[in-house]
Image 1 (tube, rainbow, N blue to C red):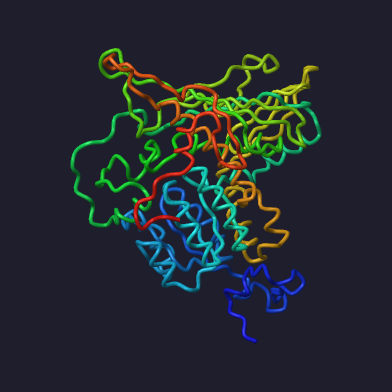
Image 2: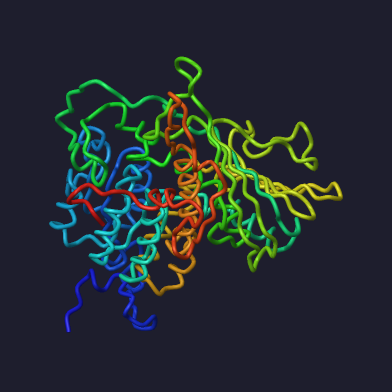
Length: 477
């Protein structure tokens, strides 16, 4: 019986004992068997895609066989570096033509994550998807279930999940050093792109080297505008997921993982207003707000055994120093711009982005620290490289089960992050008050009760429109 290379690599149907690769020492020092290499394709290969592809390539441990980007000019650095790889502008053409692909990294704007990942998984290809895993809650749940159905190895690109700092945080919580955690405060300086502004206007000629239709993907059909591409898309709901989507999967990951949290049961939001003229705030439902405050509530977990209230603020707003942390000590990053504080019955644990610089302040006055680690020197903690090795080992392998952010974990985490956006968008819903010019009711400005299993807000039906998006014709999952 003949077994193709693609079916050989990572076939979960093979029993663990039947998976066999000729050891390198048998073939000679420095020789790497072709079966040891994963054939990787990259979609969205500038920006974060640069490091995702390079780190998965892992200095030649694997092959880069195909590269795809809608913007051919921005794709040039990787097109030139991996000159032997197939070059594409449409990921659908790439997946159809190149049958050698084993796995795909997806580093596009948020609104395209699910469509590309679902197409790849349905073809039996392993997937690495940038954070947040998806544009909305329905997509995250669908992708999580698809990874199991098609038995592919998955990983979300929140690289801090693989950092030594995150591992230390989990260890400290497991040891019970700060007791039962009841409150978590998280903040970020994002957005660091235009947000809370009126919709872009004006006509702009589309650059000849951009496939705008593929860039739009499932989003509404609109004309090209440089206000969206290459980076400013994050602030518009049609494409991005705002400050929460950008940093939530990095910052919420530590407490979510360490405390063993699941679906939240309640969410409430408040957002900053923008006044351009007069005394009425701008109404921009298409855009993410300039700042937001979110509160999520979780029931007690098996790990933490205490209900948890999680408070998120963005737009540069942050929580304040707990009493246990000295006035001159930073909370979170050294400049306090991003961070997490977990407050427990025995003390406080704080850490920076990616789980770095974790510190504990105990009720008895003791302080516990671990050495500072610089992410730029660690190739993102091997997050992509470990995913590639798990792809070669297979769906049922120990390597896959040990990945820090496979979809079984990243799906619920992403849903939690996106729940905050559902609350933000519900907060902006309004209805005119009859007989009163420019006066409105805002029925979504209340606590929302969430049925996580069924993906449904139970006390405000209008909020459920944000669980799932409307897909452009021809781009449904």
